[in-house]
Amino acid sequence: MEKTIDSNMPSLSGLEGLGEADTLESSRILGVLLSLAGEVFVLKAEVKRLQYALKESNTLNEAELIEAEKSNNFSEWFKQEQQVFSETLMRPFVSPDEADNVSHLMRNNT
Image (cartoon, rainbow, N blue to C red; front, top):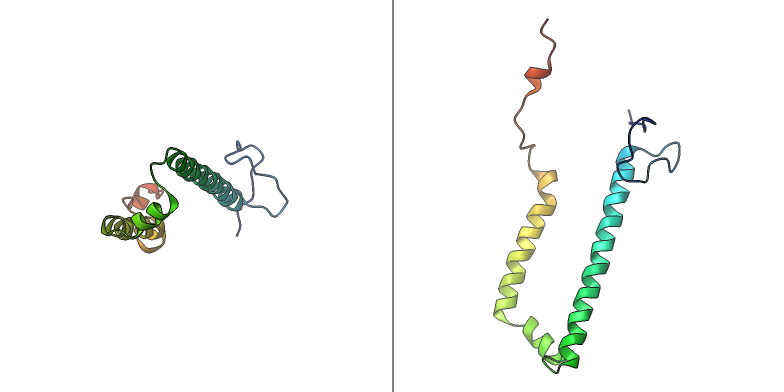
């Protein structure tokens, strides 16, 4: 059974009420996707800003940046970062809930 949006519940993502069938979960997911898309945009702009600054100050050119990508230091960092990123991204799907099982406290024992 799908959860429906409670009209008394405060907005969590600002996206509630998109349609009768829209669930709170889909609104949260869309909110996360929009947030991540914004982060990607900001990071792309930051990288481009740094590239322009390096190029205009004659610190590094495009060929030197391409060479740096081939370095052992970058390759090692990238491999480790990719592993950490993958594990972090998949943790909710492959690891059990890390919270203590307190379901016995929720039972009505009267």
